[in-house]
Length: 406
View 1 (cartoon, rainbow, N blue to C red):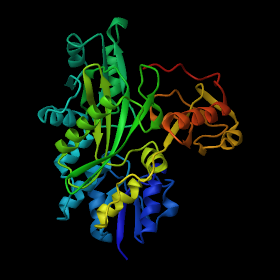
View 2: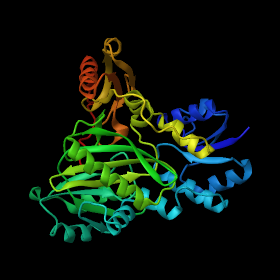
View 3: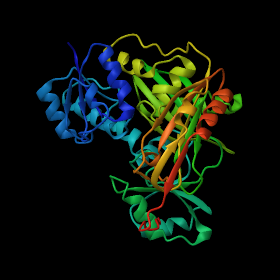
View 4: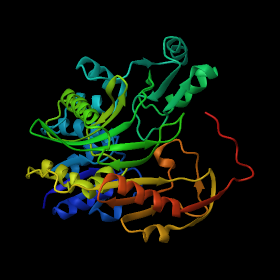
């Protein structure tokens, strides 16, 4: 029996673990979290951080997996590339290219060199550099860590509010593993993500997904709907930027998740990831709307099997994330009513009564989700919103809860 290391055992990795088991593989799940959701599905669990590449390499030499992959996490992409290089195995993405796909500073440099449209940016190493840089930036600009995900540490700066640059820099830097921080142009316009798959150096775009985010100053995703309803001219521009970005990564085989903003000056790259899309886009929405199983594509590509990336359906799918006022959750009502609505595929709560509903600053602060499918994107969105309206999360703020600032 062939063996596989899957780096990451979180809820978002579970579909890949299941698919690997379906394909008859002996599955090792690696994660630092001993309570990770995917552990019960694995044949063996190794309590190893997915970004501890030396430990992963040591385990690979000991257990001799035939394949090493990750699913929806950014940083393990580097680990996979490095470990494969150390073992002398062929890589669909070199370590250098994996860094360009996971470090926003390296990504901005690479894309600029390759002529891919990106926002104006500066790479910072101190609060003093931020304050100096701010003088040349427009009235609104974005601060983000170079190498994190899920909107952690990303914040909008409004110069007119006389911001505390030192505090803002410290807030963002604590989420940066490399210590680098980016200041970049605040792009206006609709935002989308693009799911694509590359087979033998040819990239196939499967779908474009419309994205919803929180109100400023944070950038947390609150919902997704596909296929995109943007005008065809805008979608052509999006496809062109996506293909240029994938080409700049030199990816030979595998999935990419590309985020793009359609600005008044045209489509510009927000970021690109050499992995499957998270937020249940890949595992739930894409199969519901297009019939394409990108998880199967990923494993088939690794195993040397035919990759079935072609669409077989033309429907709409949507996800909306459950939110509530900050505080301790007292009760959750309406989930059964939401589930009973025709077209609703799934209602999941991540937190229950007695747990905290935090201020929404990153994807990990969301409380749950609703997924719906219908004949087109508009109908799927309506169904999703109707289900979301049924769910009432009642919270109370603890008397001793401190006020949270930046």
